[in-house]
Image (cartoon, rainbow, N blue to C red; front, side, top):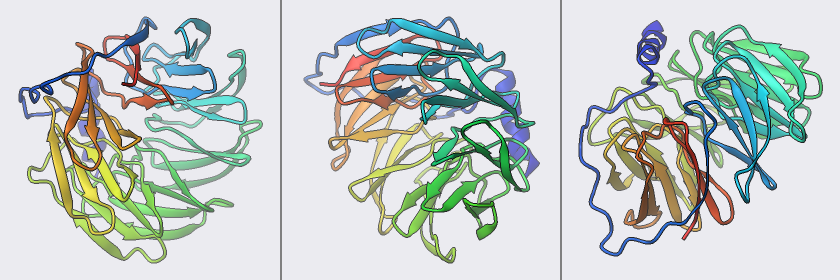
Amino acid sequence: MRQCVTALAALAAVGLTGGCDCHEDPPPPPEQPKTITVRWQYRPGARMQASAAVAGDTVYLADEAGTLHAIGLADGAKRWTYAGGESFWATPILAAGRVVVGDINGVLHAVHAADGQKAWRFEGGDMIRGPAAAAGEKVIFTNDSGHVICLRLDDGEELWRFTDYDAIYGGPALAGKTVLVAGCSMMLWGLDLADGTERLSVELADATASRPLVLGAGVAVSTFMGHVLCYDRADGTELWSYTPEREADESYASPVSAGGIIVVGGGDGAIHAIDAATGDRLWVFATGGAVEGALAIRDGVVYATSEDGRLYAIGLESGAERWRFNAASPILAGPTLTDKAVILATEAGIVYCLERP
């Protein structure tokens, strides 16, 4: 499946990580659109395709110029910046007072969240696209060489490494003491958190850029073709599969869930809601462009960004649009939610903090 890597490299050469052939107009807005208040804007000076991370009163942003930014959640004022040196496509995570993020040159950076000073750097050897995951004193990340690498969070010392047959884009997910990854090899793996020993291996019907979604005793992944597959985490038995009405060959979003409903965006420009127990289609909401980033859910509302430049707020149960915001620039990164706000990072290099109606 090296074509999986080759295809994405070709897209990267023209500045994209995916695309939508739908070329559809976005749906009309609600009859009584809500007034959306922009709390602040921040301009990092470079394009962004990674979602923001929030911890306490601080927002952390990683841009394509290789700079990590810390800004105030209340006012968008810059607190510090860290120069990583290479473009960031991965979303940062916060763990044990550190901001951890990988770059396209394969370096995992750990930075002190308080002041932006380097804690350590680890040379992983190949491009890092997905967010890392932290568990206790460990941090785990994946790269385009198919490596799953576990480091000691305190000092970046390598603890173990597992190698898949091909690139892993989506990053790892954690289920108790198991690390779950899936990628271009069309394999889903479950690894022992302690030492990387293989616990589960499942052959998928298609390659995936998805971070696995843990669903109780199950695990789900979305594929490049827009399918969603769910398996038993104990033995790998397929529990159900979901097929979109129109397949897309460039779907990169990872699924999320709440209230027994899975939602995922696709290269078909649509947001799909799926019954987490059965895999049945509940509703489909069309946007005007590919939906690349992971969606976010809070208080019964799904928040989705699209390459059509809009943020959509959609009822989780009904699939009906509540409101929308037009950023007037393609948005590849998924939205980040706080108790009262939504944070968007756009391809144009503008970060918006919106008050949630």
